[in-house]
Image 1: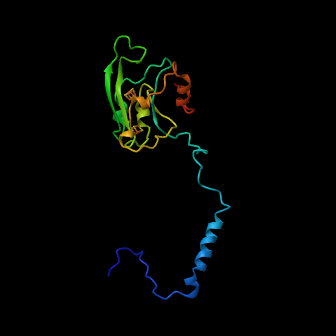
Image 2 (image 1 turned 45 degrees about the vertical axis):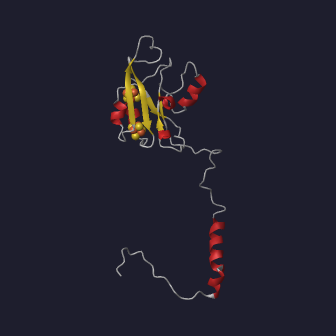
Image 3 (image 1 turned 180 degrees about the vertical axis):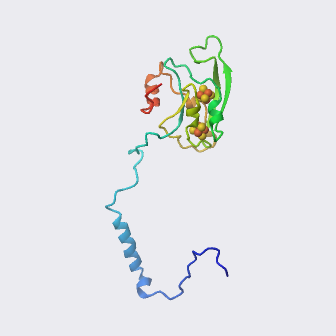
Length: 181
Ligand code: SF4
Ligand code: SF4
């Protein structure tokens, strides 16, 4: 019969020797490999006690930004959605009403803003495309979830805490990567 690949090996049907039947050489060989790893540097990280250092250009979970007065920066212009190669971003714009100037920086804002983290490839193009510094990729992971729906992040998950009313949470969410605004 013609072989599909050249990786096939012919199997020896010879009866096993006494040593082979005792498995001693194989056990000794296996233990030697195990012991040879004892004094080697461990490649594993004992997360969550230990945390791996990320590259300075690591791109994690998205954050929707606010200005220093706590107003949402996003104007729902849609440039991030157009730039997204994975079509992971959807939004619905709305007009700012009178009396909402303290909530939204521009006259238009994103009433709904969603990112599908299962589609996202964390390329950062949405951040690059945004003219309002309204979205950036933080140093946080998208946590594990049991349902697909749980990976669709809405404004509630994405919006950074308000720097006026929740300064500690805001500072924590900003992380060390963001030094500008
Ligand atoms: S990081 Fe890339 S893939 Fe993810 S939402 Fe932004 S543009 Fe789309
Ligand atoms: S995040 Fe930026 S690019 Fe995306 S809709 Fe808002 S303002 Fe426009």
